[in-house]
Image (tube, rainbow, N blue to C red; front, side):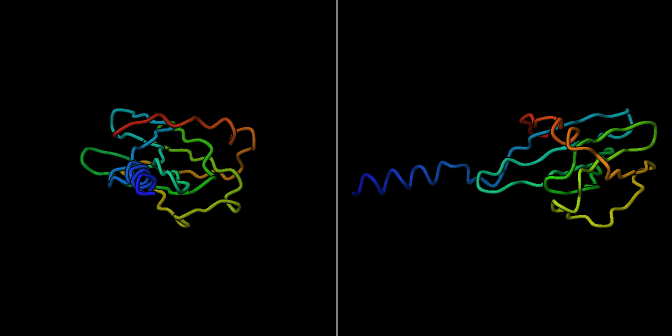
Length: 128
């Protein structure tokens, strides 16, 4: 019985309860002025929301945070396009996001198709 308890404790303690969670980056790009990162965290027991952040120099701004709705992030010129699939069915943490950051504009498109949602990129482990 002691061995079983010790085994359970070892498994429990080794399940990644560290303070630092790994980021899984779905998409990251920059235009020389700002960097756009779309990522989620590695949670064992919970579904992580997706984050879209902008980085300019030492400044980092999370422009959007949602669970199970973001299908794509693109940038063209000074506009960042955020595609959402049926935002009413997921969890959107930022209900009224700012639309201007570092001289760039955020445009939210909530008409993404199910096909676009299912073709979102998988995350790749990173320590951004």
